[in-house]
Length: 214
Ligand code: OGA
Ligand code: MN
Image (cartoon, rainbow, N blue to C red; front, side, top):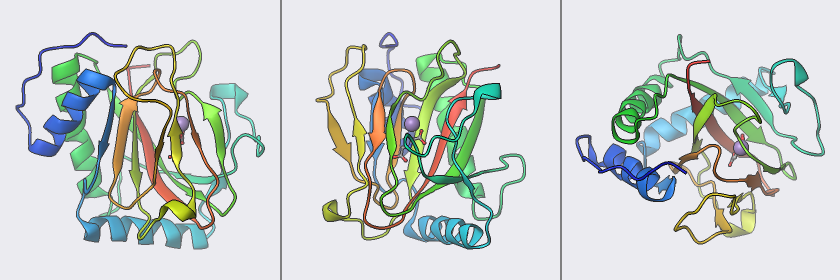
């Protein structure tokens, strides 16, 4: 885990809170990160693109070793074009830029760019325990997951389960996080093994990673 750095709250509250939690525990859960209207529009956009067949079955691995392994992961994803975002995506991408600068400034991480996709887990779909940082690469440094599911309840399932890795943390693990609309989960990608539990309804998110220079 990263060394703790003195924290300077020089950004708006929500960014300062997330950066503080990343500094102290490598992990942050921030509710109401965006307004309900923006969240609603993002969910609507994801659902219409999905209905139009724009999503693909997610694969695991990276580079040349990408594999379809539905027993490990059976969500469907659509990669986003961060250079040409839709009008609906712009406010979130702007906030991610602010967050990227805030993290770089306070945790000295050198985050260089963001890559992200919409993900839809149909009922019963899951993603088994994994790390987001690929073995032998340093590219994915910080994971950000924005949930887009209105009225999500515990009985709907679909929790993100965070498990203890090899890194020392003050968090009480394992921990289950519900994918409720407007919740942003941010964590140091290499520090926490995690899994997505099956749900009884569609589960939608905008998931991404801040990367180092390749
Ligand atoms: C992933 C992932 C978690 C979630 O896409 O790598 O772990 O809660 N997603 O959607
Ligand atoms: Mn993951």
